[in-house]
Image 1: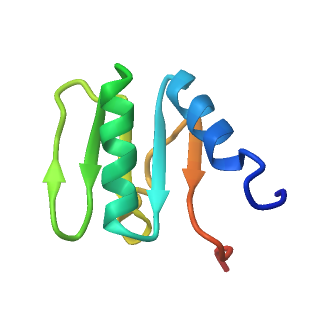
Image 2: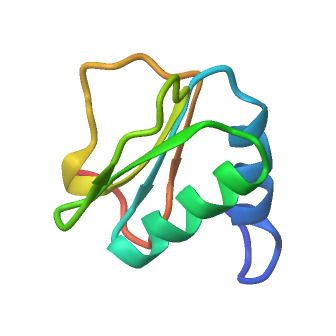
Length: 88
């Protein structure tokens, strides 16, 4: 937790990039797609999973997804959840 514009998301994504296996969970398809693009651009094999589209990247170690499609049966080294409210 921290104030707005303090680098929380940036630091979390940098840690996600270094993880052996990770997932980014977003409340919106657009945010999931943005993370998918950034991770792949930076050399991290990442698949995209949203209600509207699925882009499976061979040998992907990471997934960028909307929250409702989170795979809760998988084990991850790092999980980044974007958005304001907490899970209940």
